[in-house]
Length: 309
View (cartoon, rainbow, N blue to C red):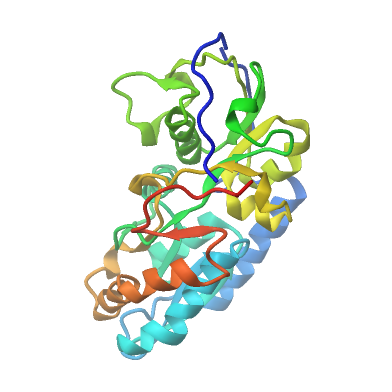
């Protein structure tokens, strides 16, 4: 259920405590384990590209924490790919930068785990990567305000501590959401999908911002008033869907796209891969499969998704 935004009146500045998220920094022993796992998996994929070879199995990567992406690629592999004359296999990896490198080098044909602005961050940090969107929006992640203390946005008090994702692209999405709810105002002239904390013009409820890796947000929620993040993170941590108290559909700028290696975009196999992911049957699958519905929405779905109260 989408809750009504709280009243805009009242006096609420912001304080920042900063940590990082997926694309680059994960933190501590967990990061070492994840990166090592990604490297091993990529070694299994191979070091040279076979993407352009006739009849080759095209590997499409997904983050190993995302069961919805796994289900989606499984459907593509089993049902859609044969109808489009190609073979597709899902590859589960834990380190996003390793995925982007593999796509750029052609060890992996594509991936669906990121939106355009996230990809832009990765490419800015890794100028040698040659990767680009191959499709328009495929799906929208369920992304919203989570709280174990409050059941409506209007209940969140002045001065509350709210976690935002620490990476710039998802931080921008969180700020868009809060502005959409009437809780903050971004400066005029700033593109909402590139906004950061410095671009907040008005914070009338004096919320305190706590920047955390997406994977750390569920653990931190008990000590926070609320967190803005992906259903993937919270549901994977076994938090109940009822803790999602506000979740409007995100703009297309924050929707998943199939990304591909730039030098392979004109190959027959990649053209067929793009056609496969643009098949309307994929949208119907996303809308109805119980493994996808809690975490992602079809690209064409309008309206608001949030937990019911």
